[in-house]
Length: 287
Image (cartoon, rainbow, N blue to C red; front, side, top):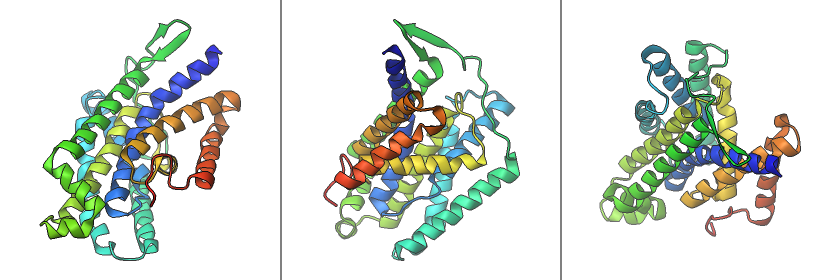
């Protein structure tokens, strides 16, 4: 029983970062109805930027989220303004092909700059732990969960309490209505895409102390993000957060029940069940 409780705790802690990762994807889709297939590769670039800052300047990964989040925000805003805005009214097939192309470019740029070998940020506290009864807590994962939760809460308050956040929510709910009251929709789209990219860039920095990464890791993060937002509900803020926790726990339990190499199969079984019985997701709307 202690082994299963330990797996649930570990999955819950990792699921917090998954939630932050999926929030960015859900925000982009909720506002623009654009599926960002380059989401995971943007996260990998956040991880590499954090690694570079640690190696060259000794900046702790948890401090580098300010830099990586800002850098990936600019990357996302540039992709939105320079590419996505041109095909907003195009068929979804063109949007998918465009974002797949962006993903391939980002992956191959990372391969050219950093090489194919896996990297990892080796901090002094990487193996630090503490115990609560029979359950051991990994200090980097606890810190990562706390920071991810704080960033998710900050994003929620931004969307609910600020004028810019209200503009984003208005554009998501009714674009024509937002236009009629004078909202600059294209600027809102650029801001939303940048914020979504910043979330995944920050999530990348938070995962570097305990997860090795390489240029090809982006595909895993993209698939995981899609899994989470479909389970939670496309475009739902709370759904993305709950979905991230569910996927994290299901993968951790899958590693115990089955074998670590097959841990993702449990979350994909959950995905299939959601698509069969509640295709709008656990907390998604009727759409």
